Image (cartoon, rainbow, N blue to C red; front, top):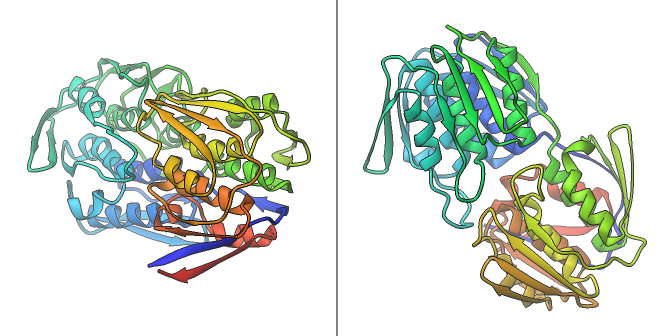
Length: 420
């Protein structure tokens, strides 16, 4: 197993192009299960999670070829409704094959999901929504078993104790497109990745309105056809690269950015006094100003993304003053606090809150990544720290950041791999 070693203190400069969004491509690949016709997905990032989803599609009977950012999905020689634990346990997003399997085959047996250890993430909203469409659901030996003679449109309220659910919205939407009649999803997730999935489904012949808002309306159709689609840019990767410029005092042009997807992050960075410029899909971030502390609360989109919480905490760790970070999506998503403190940060956790007192400089240290976004936060900390930082369990990083080492090296970072 490899670890990532970073020699900190280098001001990153240059250009970086953002890859396709991980959280969009996975459900879109799952949606190809809804048709027997060929589908072409472009702008696909080469990630561990992408490879895992392609393995699941093949196990379910699809032919799926991946080359140079393009996935071709065609009909295989068989259909399977069984997504086994060995595959689904590697990432939570794989659970979104439940909706399309049920919609297309009228039955599904899907393992309860795995993924990052960032707190309890139940699937109750998924099952609530699927049940409302008329499916009979049971759980046996760690598997969700769903059957439906005919799915029927319904009114579904998908709000949870921490707000809307992206994957539950995805799952219900994919099941509903082939259901008879009209489905209304109230308290639907508004994330751009959900809207991107809806756009792909519309290209396949689905009738969907309101995607990107809290109320999605779906009129079921009898069948869907093949389609081609290009994945939206990854807003979390874009945010991470913007923060890489700020935390190192660098100057980076971040290309292939949809500025409107970064509203909450840009707002907080502007409040902190960051130097940011935007034009024609390119954002320039310069770490030339002394930043001010800010208070952050993670919320469902368009609020501040929980997937940027760890990275923002790293930036605030070296920003003079006291910042308060409140996690309202996954209250236990603070595994990186102890690792940042090992590097000299002054962070105190109080329940769902983290009190961050900025220090002048972090010091390189051996640290361990607990999840995907925590690993990105540790990379940012390592880039700014004095000395060398070694990050273990970087397979987490490979789940969500395409060619991260190469991109950082091209910006001037001193980064390399070593065996554990």
